[in-house]
Image (cartoon, rainbow, N blue to C red; front, side):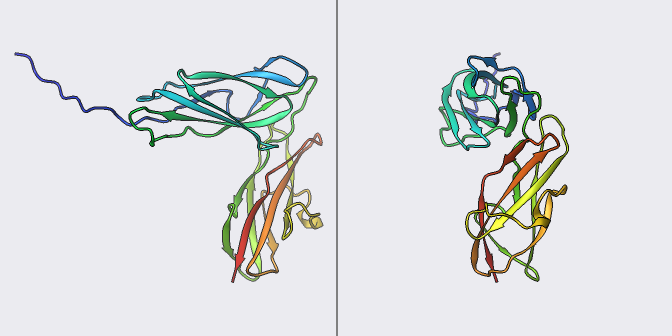
Length: 219
């Protein structure tokens, strides 16, 4: 006697696991096509219940994004500018669940330039305050927090920019070349918008500057 199997129907897509370029890699796997560009192969796992993938690669310094949609397999190649750090992320797409689009983790790598022996740091991740956040301060002081990483593992120093103009005005000496990744800063204006960013410098003098984020200070 034959049993009747139950078909549960289509299932929701699952996020992919990134494989290459490795997270934090000082990438030497690109295929050079000119003095300024190289082709980089991106690979990730086959995600269950997924019909295609969407790859997004962002230049961490310029914030320029390269997007590739409707990828039928778990790999793709892109031509990128040398001498920059990049972030990449993969989205799983299902024809049965078009609005359910799980994303992979975000990984970073550095694509070396010709003749480059030591790479610039990755741009700092601004942790607190987050972009657009309204914060309350105690005794006029706020603790800014960020994280940094260098592809070569070099020690780093940071310069914290905080102002009400553009997040790029010259900081005080106490906010310059600090080794920690957090700092208490006095904020004088209440109900005002501030801007902040972080410059990272390794021991070889290579630098990178984060994006500028804004926040508001309330009473």
